[in-house]
Image (cartoon, rainbow, N blue to C red; front, side, top):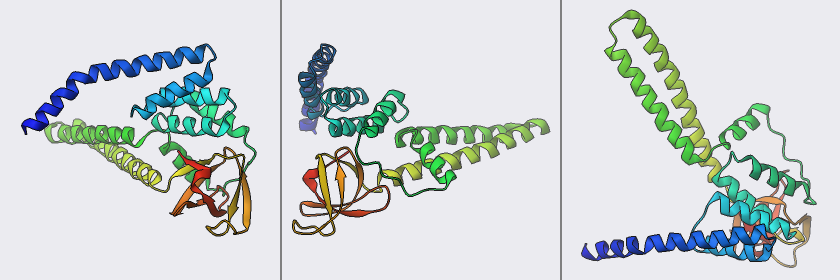
Length: 251
């Protein structure tokens, strides 16, 4: 117990210095970017991430730095990571759309019913953490409405509190659905980006296998399974095949 206390005490003593050092590195990275020293800025942002500090701003700035150096795939990877941390950020979405517009592969996704597409877009507008926060708020609202009903004496207040309770139940059900969908989406398989100028997607996980189709730098794929140094991927139109793990990078 004393040992754990000592470790926590040491960490608490050095934590301000660690945070200050990270802030200094970020400030240097921002200054390098503003002076169009994109290679230096890229290295500094990568150093921040290597130190275990993740944030939307760092990923976004790193994506911009890579884009300025015409490294499209790396820019896309970092914009995607930034978007996962802050799904509602319009600048990230616009930059990511601009990058995807410059990729060579324009794959038409399997069509979805409009309400299914709308539902997934609605859920992806927030992270699962924020959906959990909203769920707690809705549960608190429901409890308040029930308490109002139990404490109300007049018929008018009881009817009003009952209506509020019904609305709160619907909101709780909606947010529960959003939490479950967000969790399912997060665990449906890792998304990855093709990092090489051209990649042959093979029918079997071996070098001598024939190519089923070809993908190019910046294309987004879904990882289905992994076998040694090979990954089975699926693209938006449903086609799938095998690529080497080194040819893609997980978002």
